[in-house]
Image (cartoon, rainbow, N blue to C red):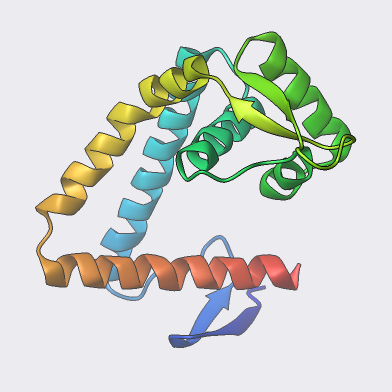
Length: 174
């Protein structure tokens, strides 16, 4: 039995079905669906590659990438920020931090006015690792994006945003 629901996003109403068998109605739609599956597979291969190169687990690598990006943007990150960013528990983040500190990727920096609090600061070694792990991946994506004309880039961005909004709405509904 296929349950159908409409998701309302900023782009209008989108029919979303919970059936695995639901297929796009047009050949072009089926091609797009196939391309999205190919992208998901390529992203998973890249995630596995990143973990293999770094020697870190997925959550540790995600935390490190976030910390390095925040440092480059001159933002300070606390353990509480990591809890929110990773969508996990305090205990898990404590373990992640301990692993990253023990490997020399993160140092704890005392908060200037609250002696109980501290910030997490990635080391240069961490920044180098993140660049090594994600540099080629990011470069490949940017290269393809830069090869698109303005119209193709705009249509692609709009389509990706609409799909993301529909999936986010499903997640909110439970």
